[in-house]
Image (cartoon, rainbow, N blue to C red; front, side, top):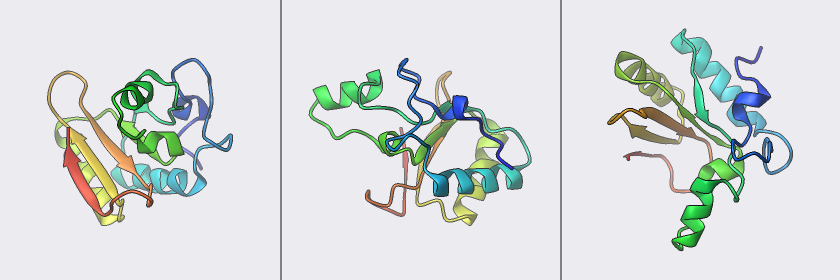
Length: 127
């Protein structure tokens, strides 16, 4: 069973792509579904796959920085805060999510989960 639709995971720039190979990474999706099952509450995806033309990734390129893990189809941002963010982080760590980013300030709070092993891991950071 998948808790996540293709539409939730598609690039939001208007291209509608789902991943670099036409699909979101199967391993990342399997792990994401497992985590969703364990936390026991919905995990709203605020950003899934992002093509290199997505404004956030394009801004990184213009600034001379490498594009992010979202371009691999192996990363998601989950819109959670407070106790739900705490629970999600705990379950992510228990399930060996190799890369976790935390943004819990302002109005756009999220937890970034990412399985891109080509990048430094394990690691955790804040935005």
